[in-house]
Amino acid sequence: MADDSCLFCRIIAGELPTDRVAETNAALAFRDISPQAPMHVLVIPKTHQPTLAELAEADPEAALEVLRLAREVAEQEGVGAGYRLVANNGAGAQQSVFHAHVHVLGGREFTWPPG
Ligand code: DGP
Image (cartoon, rainbow, N blue to C red):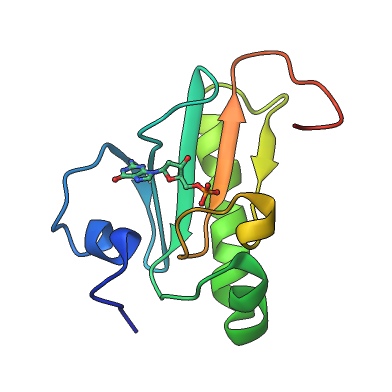
């Protein structure tokens, strides 16, 4: 179910321009507007849930589809040997857009712990 007030639902609907890189029936991948690595793509489910954790509970198959598409994007973008998946879950983790998403980051060295 789409939420008209949700930025990512509007991207899915094609109401806002975005640089799409891959798509399945259940998920969409597009470049982050504020990249934190040479390759930074967001993968989102086409159904609206505020967080990845809530998506996993409400629609586990869609959550799996997001992870599958993240892998495909990493391979397609040439970073399949090593990339980072990030899911900021909730405001306390600096989530800023409350439509479930996974960040796929690659093309540079990563450190641990993350900031
Ligand atoms: P998070 O902080 O985990 O909720 O990540 C949200 C990401 O969404 C952040 O890295 C910036 C990105 N973003 C916000 N608005 C837009 C937009 O309009 N287009 C695109 N492509 N990315 C956006």
